[in-house]
Image (cartoon, rainbow, N blue to C red; front, side):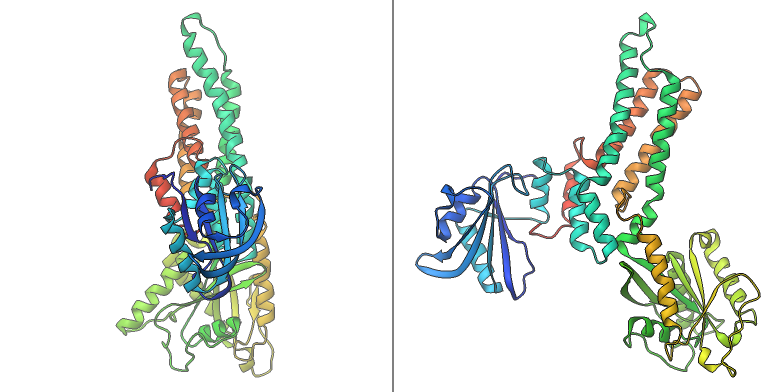
Length: 462
């Protein structure tokens, strides 16, 4: 994406019939262009941060009655003169107004161009700009809180502090190099070693937070795993309170993953119903079973479903062994809830638990008995996962990659200090770590292709 200095315009609300639609206009000629089609007070003579009622006209024809919000540089979202036209939300009216603006000299905006201008004009750093897109797409309270914290600079501030400490020591080392022949020491190696260890610890904590950050941003992926006819589809329907999945007494009905999202405790849960796990000669069903294990590998939470009548007959142990074989070491990273379904079929209404300390949640997905207890357990998980939403954690893949690269550079510094490496090599690795941290917030010049990729994920009017 090449940065343009012309005046851009775009619809900033959904292009669908609604009460109000907002058209945004930004650039040096924004006020002049809007004035050409606005019948009301002379916008060029008005104060900044004011609202004005009037009509949009095409010659003598009245197109709509509108409110115009007027912002003047640098006190606007983009840092430029900016106009927002609030029209009635007819797609015909909105398209007509945009056509008039283009006819008078405005250029249609590209994806994310308003936010890109805000970044280029110093209104926000790159991490904050990316948080704008996360805020727009937030589908839960936790995702909203995390995006708000990042947009307000919580995460960026941590990165800036780490980078400033590195800049200070890099400058001390490079100063030593300038006075190399005089054997002058400006950067104490013990102090540098302590600093590098402290920064590495913080960076590693941020890297580790990426798993939680992705869960908050994208929702908790939940795999419902069990043998055929254990009630996985019935459970999905009971949780969602709709007939999402086909329920049948015929084993192997579910042959592909069925997914839907619900919010519990301010967190999105992505429930995925999977094919029943069993030995079968059916080629298509085997493909579905293979996909079940693939879903389990990607899930953060596994609901391991067994029949209540089978709970004391090693049904759980058998399934867990199969999961361990398929998932390997990654199973240790997953939370597993064992659920005993079909308690309504127990002859004496009593439930026999496992002969172990493992907690089992008894339910009847058919009668929905015990579903409230399961939801309560999921709410606890949501609370635990979402407790970091107001902290500076990592949710962006680009940030995670840059932090890993910065960590690798600092590990080389740590190793160099231990091996008495000369200052020029230490300085080089410290500068690399600075570069990767700076790439996150855009404090160094970021490649235009990277900027284009980042802002292309935004909607047109943002």
